[in-house]
Amino acid sequence: MKVLMSGYRGFAGTNLMAYTKEKWHVTGLTRRRESYEQPATAITWEELTNGPMPEVDAVVHLAGKAHDMKNTSAPAAYFEANTYLTQQLFDRFLQSDAKYFIYCSSVKAAADEVTGMLTEEAAPNPKTIYGKSKQMAEAYLQQQLLPAGKYLYILRPCMIHGPGNKGNLNLLYGFVQRGIPYPLSAFENRRSFLSVENLSFVVTQLLESGGSIPSGVYNLADDESLSTNDLIQIMEEVTGKHVRKWHISPGFIRRMARIGDVIRFPLNTDRLQKLTSSYEVSNKKIKQMLGLDRLPIDARSGLTATIRSFQSE
Image 1 (tube, rainbow, N blue to C red):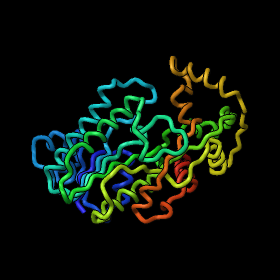
Image 2 (image 1 turned 90 degrees about the vertical axis):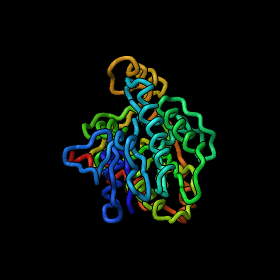
Image 3 (image 1 turned 180 degrees about the horizontal axis):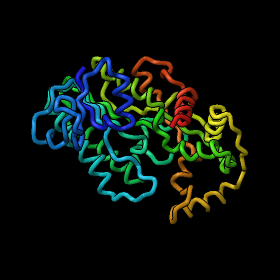
Image 4 (image 1 turned 45 degrees about the vertical axis):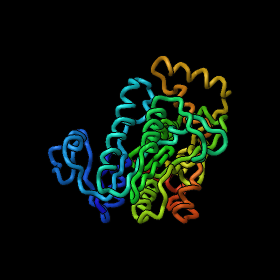
């Protein structure tokens, strides 16, 4: 299969490339071609705008601007990367002979906070600029007339993790690795995660479905949700270290986190929310469409592999 892939140098892209190296011929889409890359293996956005679309079977759009934990990015940067470039690429897809378009959006396009389980039926209500830019891109794609024989898959992954990407696990790992008492054990929560291997599996299955899976929006998450205390336990098992767990008043912790909103501090409100609030995502719809009871990698196994990779860095 011939695939045009944006974001192919990023974390998800490099893992997807490795996962499909025996199956796909990938042409990368990039802002700037590296000296070692040839036009046959990578084209620039400028070349895509001014020249012909490569002859491919599918477009996988992974590129975008991630949420800035420090809140230093201008809103326009999000809409440029997450909305405008998505619109531009989809327009070229509609004019081409390519059959499949996969857009890697985010659960944050639907909701920043979740009560219960997030499903695809929830009315989108993003609060952050990041979520709004992703939702605006989704809305544009869904508003366009999709010709017969073409398929659009909008994927909404939750937090993706895997070897080489610590994400929000970095702070927790630091507590365990350095033996620092963990101060957030009084928080009770359940969160969904997504192994990058499960992401690669789903993308591959969609493109190999032959059009048997209908276009639509699909949440992506591992089968099990875990608490932050579960993550600490997994890290202890992997590292062989044990940390003391402090049960400090959540109200006091929230007040301390506000300091990080103003000055440099290990914890701020956004990071605290990601570590301690509940955010459960249903993957029932995508599994039903793929005819699966479970995804290949369970949450504990995937997170264990990710945390083990930290030790070699």
